[in-house]
Image (cartoon, rainbow, N blue to C red):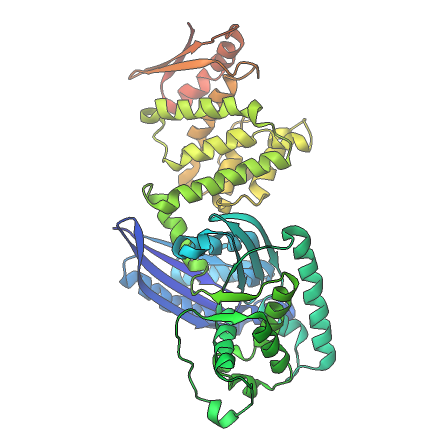
Length: 523
């Protein structure tokens, strides 16, 4: 059974999780975490400090040894908010590559939220109904409305605990005017979120990450002690028992936030559940949770230890195991993302659907010829659907515009590399043919170049079979021989001469790539 490893390089901490596939499910083998505060300097100066880099590299080297020890078949390394903002992010990714051999993938806030959602709904049974997911990390806060295990709406806000601490809370305890500015900033960002997600009416709120865990533990202590009194000596080393699910009610979070704003760091560290490392950044996170819950009418949240790394592992499982339950969910999510792009750019599905159908038929019929991986079927379908989005910008040169839009759009379920592949498939449907030195092709791993070119040939044939948009009823039959391919066209109404002529124009390119002759017959 394959073994996967997920590495999450966050703004506050780095996390590792290694899991093995057993009976189409994931079994955790190893976990590790290190607080590195990568984003601390980024949110002050715009660059990752050498000290933060070195601390993160030390943690990643330890993770690398664990990955080697468990002989992981696939490792995915992602970075989030701090790396999105850092002007020297490229230098750090090169250092990671030289130290571990890993390629770091810097993901967007929405992709981060999607993966967290995937991890939670895959493992939390209660999350498959209507619920709100909140993930407040070091650099950003993602709020997701989920219904039936599907994302209905999502926002990513610059309300991370480390970011707020560095930008607003520069003294200990925080100055009154700084707290006022912070509250105004939180209100402004949450107003933007409200315009997008409205007022969610849910009975379940799931919160992830360390800030939520700390607030839930501290709230549990509040429930045990009706009066929240500071007793530093008696509380300093006290541990909170984890009994059942960790939850926090809105009035408890508000009480904690208002109280900790007035405390010094050592006083916050003495609160059970907060601890010395979390106490340094808890104030901003607590104010965000309190304000967010009040604004959206959320009465309580339940803490979940699941997070980004669990979503990464679920994604890897779904990509390789077609029988895993998560596979169908990922496929559905990706297709919904494609249709959303089509809707946004005014593409009518009935116009491009015949191209999609024909490219799927060609993919299946010519499987022995093109030898493409299974995932290319979806990439080809996606490119077929989005092939004309560039016309939204300009009909002239629309293939170039299409490539740019696909490569730079946020399409749920597609990594940047996958979007590059789909955008390249859609780019070369005109007169231009792909070349390894093209800017578009240079964004794609070299080992994928031949697959992309073969996919382009199939998609060009599918487009050629639909020169007349009214020819949706054109049926095809493919005969595969050792040295030739015969493509029979059987229209149910009207002729197919235009399509036959268009396909014949592709015969030379087909022969160049597949080393077989292509013949077209109208029957």
